[in-house]
Amino acid sequence: MMTGQVLERGAGILLPVSSLPSPYGIGTFGCAAYDFIDFLKRAGQKYWQVLPVGPTSYGDSPYQSFSAFAGNPYFVDLDFLTEEGLLQRDYVESFSWGDQESYVSYETVYRNRFQVLRTAAKNSRHREQPDFQAFERENSYWLRDYCLFMACKEHFSGAEWLKWEEDIRFRSPEAVEKYEKLLEEDMDFWAFCQYKFFCQWKKLREYAAEKGIRIIGDIPIYAAMDSADVWTHPGLFQLDENLMPKFIAGVPPDAFSDTGQLWGNPLYDWDAMEKEDFEWWRRRILSSQKLYDAVRIDHFIGITRYYAVPGGAEDSVHGTYMEGPGKKLTDVINETAEKLYIIAEDLGIVTPAVRKLLADNHYPGMKVIAFGFDGNPANEHLPHNFKETNCIAYGGTHDNETLAGLFCDKSDEVLGYLFDLIGTRDREKIVEELFRLAYGSVANVVIFQAQDVLKLDNSARMNFPSTLGNNWKWRLRKDQLGQRESDWLGHLVHVYNRY
Image (cartoon, rainbow, N blue to C red):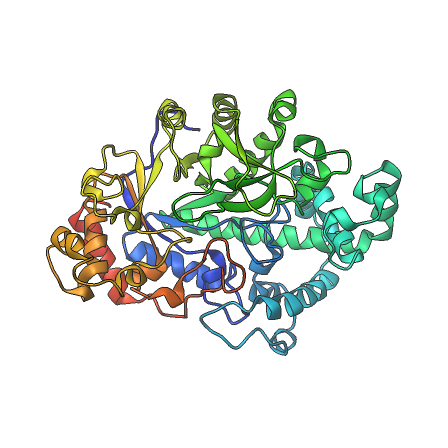
């Protein structure tokens, strides 16, 4: 990391790529992404924060990806492929992409997107292109294994890799060679998708840089069990002789849940990681550096100690805390991330060890204003209690209610302190005044969700943790962010010196 340097004072918006407007059912790296960057520029913003951009699996969560390195093929823009001559417009428009402008229909996108991308791949001569060959070389650490993983997953009707034939499940050299030959064409398709993903993203990021917009990414701390990473590197995870997880990730019971949260990810074998000089993590940081200007490490507190639940458990009641790598890993991250700012998601039980690790590395932590209203005026998430500039202040995160949704059904009595804080009892002004408090705080960076910029209710909420179903679906409508919003945000930027 750029040691001692901090993100400059400014403001930004959290908007997942999937939430961008698009005629094709889900946000992409197309024209709407460029339009959003233009909006950020007009609004005086400096930062665009996105959620993880990896390929999503069952449940559609960007935090449960088939790969820690690959990009989501859904984000490859079909109009740009059409402009390249790889698709015909009437062909693309002949497919259904869902009938909800404000929500992603993942089932429809899944059913049709890959069919269209396969057509583009067949029309492409990418194998002959020096840029594609260079892309394969530059990403040799993960690309071929990922492509084989995805091709095998299709071959075995979408089954998780633990249910594949034994020889390829255990990756015997003979089986790998056999399936690489058998599925060569499918592997090439998945390589094409990755090539187009990274080409389109590179151009978008260059455009953002021209406009003075920095992109903040997100690294899920754990790999998904059903991922190319665990299948390819089982020795780096706490697995038994049958490749089943000995322990899985979660968080213990608390005031919000008697049974805690069971995430289900396999846990790292940190001793094995250290013996390889944390090479997997080095590669992961290098990959992030190609994508982002800064990156948020999700569940950063798990680096000092992590909660381990026995594999096969149905809840997290009987887990135990285990020691993490701490400074050993952050030293590696800092050595590797020469041009990447690191942000620590330090929400949860913040121990003295976590605080020391943050301070020693100059990593900014997070403050979430939505967490501040528990009746305690000294709550650390309230802007007047921020003690240092090197932090990121969020209105809320993707896991929270929208700000309008959070307060809409509360009584005047419950909202008494909030009214005192913002200086008005006008409910219509609550969200605006919370923006004002955040922008006026000492926090170097202030980030609000696009939903809160628009003052939307909980119908626009992105995720309900520990649930399946109606998550990760909200989308911005075309022109929903307009001059009114850019003028308002630009005014706040001017008043509170966040140029």
